Every structure is written in structure tokens, then in C-alpha cells.
Image 1: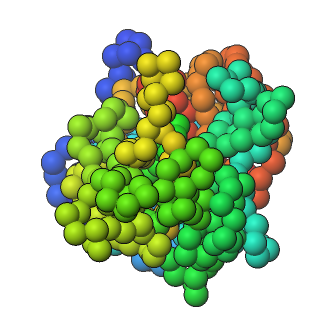
Image 2: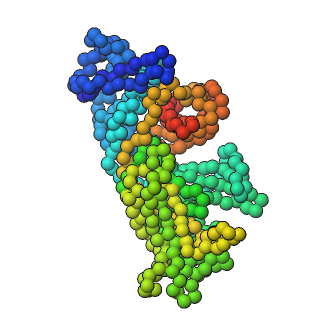
Image 3: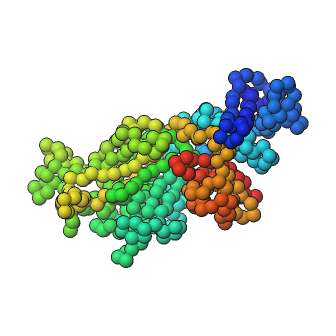
Length: 439
């Protein structure tokens, strides 16, 4: 019998704003004596029937294999008891919709209270993103267009299930462009041009596992976020120069100077800067810096431009919900009183990894009352979330849909594989999560 460490009580107020999410009463017991094994009705005086029904479902998970299989939903849980309760939350919806609101409150509040995450290191895995050699993905003109500074922007993103990368694809009269992150397996180490999508290494950090790595343009917004509302600590990754940037610094080009100058003594540098973000996606004030090129040494023989994969330790950022990247170059040009970089602001990264350090706390009191997302007959129905940005993830953590909620009781066509899905809705700075099953 599952060792439950407290009874769970739902207390309703006169209206949803007065409802309290849940209360964990500090009673320890090693069996489910508070409810019947048949129908979940309270078997002890003073225990509500909702409490009984909630506890009854704790019984359905009796073997560790069930919980370990379902842990892939978040990929973060290490302790068996936590995983069972998360598993319970999703199965509960299918068993009886009547008690889904209770199950949602129980599961979310449990996560708010415990945040029991694995201490296993999570590592970026781009395997299978590209199926052919010498190819790349740098965004596409799909979704809702937005008028940008240089043309029409299309907001994209990609994820490996743990880490999420933003991408902006821009179309204009003079050609298409992208910013943020792209992924690639190209190996061109000779072409000195912005169309070159390769690292100067010609391969990813560990090309025996997978050749795919990430190319970043840090001249605009480049932010990595963590899926499932997790915080991460002890982050690290491997970085190197993009071929385009490397050759520009080494030889100079039509816009940029050769680093070191003609005599090789100019104190040039290209610095990659990582900034951490807190649970509210606000900068923490902590930064980590890495020199991708450095000609500031007194002895010019020590000057270098990185052309191998090197570790960039991000642990000084602490526990963060996201990381943004920017770059500083010594080669700047004054145009009308504004300084612009001449050095191409591209770099490559691979093997990003970190340890999950808890969830961002949800506003438990409004998880159920604020709105809903549910699936029926090939469509998602969205209620009470007008104006929210919604992302949908499958059981493996991959994002399978993203859209904006434009009205109440809105129906959105949804095609995906069978199984549990998670919808994440962001509205007015608040984040709400819902689960549904595609059968």
C-alpha cells in the first residue's frame, strides 16, 4: 500500500476567488484507512467525501515501473513517490472528469510544495532533428506574421524536451534572414559568408553521438528557456566560433578588421556574455563571460581565436529559469552617433546541461478557476483564457502546437499522436497548466 503522508482537503469559498487550493494535514499513515477501497466514500468521521475520493486514487499506483515509465512527462523526477502523484494527476482526468478539478489542485499544489526534482544532469539532445547530412533549420515563415524592424517576422521555437530555443524568421523585399537560434550539421570551414551555417570545428562537440549542434546569432534577442516551468542550476555548455565569425576575425573582411591589426598588437576581443533570469523572467544581475577571441595579452604569442569546442561554465548564474546571450566586440563603428559591431555576432553551442532545481511556483488558487483547455473530437476547446499564448507538449516533452486564444469557448483544430498532453497557457504574466488525453 502506498505510504501517504497526509490527507488532502479541498475547501470551497463563496466564490472561486475565496477557494483555497489545498491543505496538507500533517498526519502520517501507511495505509488508506480514510476511504473505502470500493467507492472512495469516507470511512471515518470528519473526512469529506472529496478527501476520500482523492485518496482512493492514490491506490492505483502500486508498482514502481508505472511511475518510472511516466516520469518522461517531465524527465525531472527522481523520487518514486513524487512521480506517482504526477502520474496520478494525469490518469485521474481519464478516470472521472467529475473529480478532475480536485486532482488538478492536488497535483499542482503538491508540486508547488515539494519541487522534488532529480539531481541527474539534463543534457541537450538534438538527435533526430536533422535526417540528412549538410543541412540546417533556421526558422520558417509559418504562423502569425508580425511587423518587425526589418520586415515581416515569424516567431518560431524548437525544443529537445528540456531546453527551448527561440527563433525569429524575417521576410523582406531584399531577402530573408533569421535571428536567435538555429540548428545545423553542416561542416563548411572555408566560406567567409553569413550564409555559412557551420562551426569552425566542422562538427558538433560529440559528433560520434550526433552531428547536430546550435548556431546562434546574438545580435538580437537570443534566450534559452527551460520547459515544464523548471529552474536549473550548475549549468554548463560547450562553445566555439562560427566559421563566418572566425574567418572575419582572422583575415578581416569588407566590414570588419583583422583582429590584432596589421602589426598584430591591437587589443581586440570578442566576448560572449550569458545573463541569468529569475522565476519572473527578469534578469538576476548575474552574468558569465567567455572570450571567443582575445588579443589583449602583453605577449602577442598568447593571443587567440577559439577554433575548438571549449567549456563555458555557467554555474555562477545560480538557479535560473532562462539564459540570454549577447556579445561584445572591440571592433565597433560609429554611425550617426551610434556604435555598431563590425564583427559578425555568431557563435555555436553544444552539450548544454544543468541540474533541475525546482519548479516555478504556480498561483494555486487560480489553477482551476481561471480557465480550461480540453480536447474533444479532434479539437482543443479553450475557455476563460482570452489573450493567452498557449503551447502544447506531448508526453515526451516535445512542443506540438502553439497558438493564441482569441475568444471564449474557442475551438482550435488539433492533430497529434494519442496519449497525454500538457497545455501551458501564459496570460498577463501568469502561467497555467492543463492536461488532456488524445484517444
